[in-house]
Length: 167
Ligand SMILES: [Fe+2]
Ligand SMILES: [Fe+2]
Image (cartoon, rainbow, N blue to C red; front, side, top):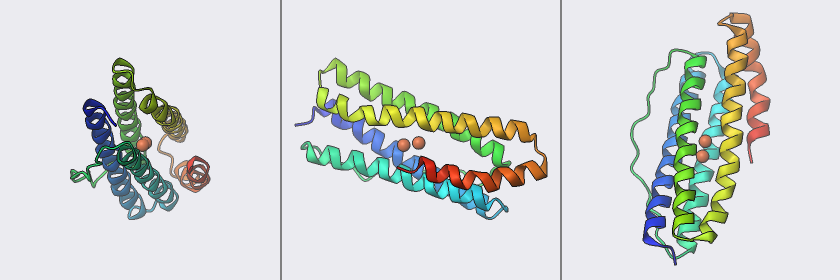
């Protein structure tokens, strides 16, 4: 049986993953309607991944005798200043998600819930990947320096990266 404090923390994480999916979806729509089809493909795939992160948590909570809440979500930002602004926002968001996951892990240790601690290690590893992906893409965009030709190549090359990161 899940400790109430852990059930609450996991439900907050469920909401954060759902909100992440929602945010990536809004970014994908912006990219698709502003001529960045490759970036849109990448972002739609990220939205699906975040939904999978949410589902995995929900199923864990339910299997452990808790009750997963289907969260109400905030409307995501719909307008962006460009692809670089999107990836800056993604890095900031993923960094805050990592902090939230670390807090769940801390709570697991303090109440000695080693089962959930073990389960959460998948999320710890996933966040390392997501943060480094966002940093790598921001580095590429910094190199492009707003040059239209370079942005075109960025948008073409990002499609493969989305597939690599899908798991
Ligand atoms: Fe996630
Ligand atoms: Fe994420």
